[in-house]
Amino acid sequence: MAQQLIGPFKQLITMDKLPVKGALKDKQLDIIENAGILIEHNQIKQVGSFNELLKTASKFNIQIEEIDCKLIALPGIIDAHTHICWAGSRSNDYALRLAGKTYLEIAGAGGGIWSTVLSTRAASKDELAKITLAHANRMLHDGITTIEVKSGYGLTVIDELKMLEAIHQANQNTEADLIPTCLAAHMCPRDYQGTNTEYLSVMAEQLLPIIIEKGLSDRADIFIEDTAFTPEEAFHYLETARQMDFKLAIHGDQFSTGGSNIAIKTGALSVDHLEAAGDEEIRMLAENDIIPVVLPGSSIGLGEAFAPARKILDTGASLAIASDWNPGSAPMGDLLIQAAILGIYEKLSIAEILAGITFRAAAALDIRDRGILKSGQLADIIAFEMDDYRDIFHNQGKIKPAKIWKKGTIVL
Image 1 (cartoon, helix red, strand yellow):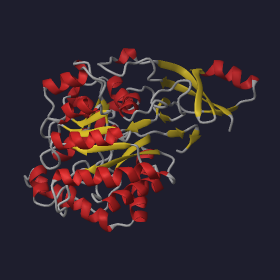
Image 2 (cartoon, one colour):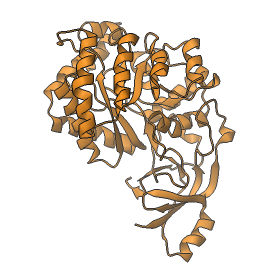
Image 3 (cartoon, helix red, strand yellow):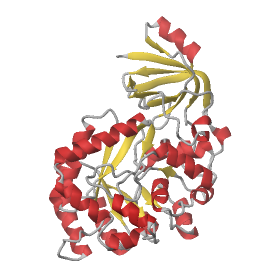
Image 4 (cartoon, one colour):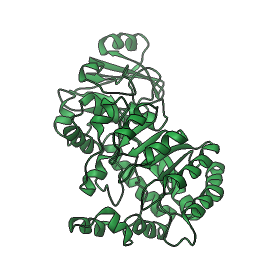
């Protein structure tokens, strides 16, 4: 299909002309009433008045997809941090948390990430691809058109490659875009006979070159925490990955600090979690171009405080919001609901919530062709059947998109 015109939308929220960093007010949103979107191939050619675009469409015999209900259009949502490739269950961890055990206590007793590692190692590549595909398609129907997906439940060269190949296989079979990230540095596996540093050296020397050779990912992540790796251990691994041209992300400042500092030293794209971030970490993030990614699903799943999103924005940093969907600490996997709840507790404006799941999330992934409805961007569009865009979050994310277009093709 060469060109098509979609509309009229009651409101179209473009997310255009907004800064990547700092606080936002709802009055800054670019809202077009009675709007249309002109699409050429996979991209947006023009947004504007539907009636004006209709004149152009009629003149050049452009196909028209006329909408017969009240719809509010937004850019496709981007989830910049997930772990949706896994096998097994962590319901036992959940029951232990309800009984009063902490995340770190459960992990120390052999639960947590290690439990999922054992199940994931036992699964075949095809089984993991099928699970990942099911998760991705559920997210797509919630309006998530781009999904970052981490490995990290294999923790051997063979099993990490299996996970990344499963993610690649799932990506071939879903309309959503899956962005793979190597998280081989999730923790040092309990069955590894060596030190943390030696394990990271094996991953850097034996795994990362194969990932590059096979084109399985160009992103590397590491968990900096008491149950995983120290800032010093992480620094050397990240520097090696950076020299191989991997883009860097960091699980940091979840229960203790140190991750933000390493993110700045290594030039990481993002530091994700930040529940433990204090004034000094937030100041450093505001003074640099790293995207803070907060994960309300993890806070909800663990019964812990949210990351200080309001303070992060008011200090002048950016803010992306992601689901952290994983089998243990964040099993809900519903980004809209999580973002709405975070907004209530952290007093975020709707503009800040929307920015956090669209163009600011794209910046966390270093993707510049989506997250905004404007000329030249991918035609990733979601539409809600309601009278006002504010109703999406007033209903706390419970209302899902009525229509979804991925690269100009309707998928829901």
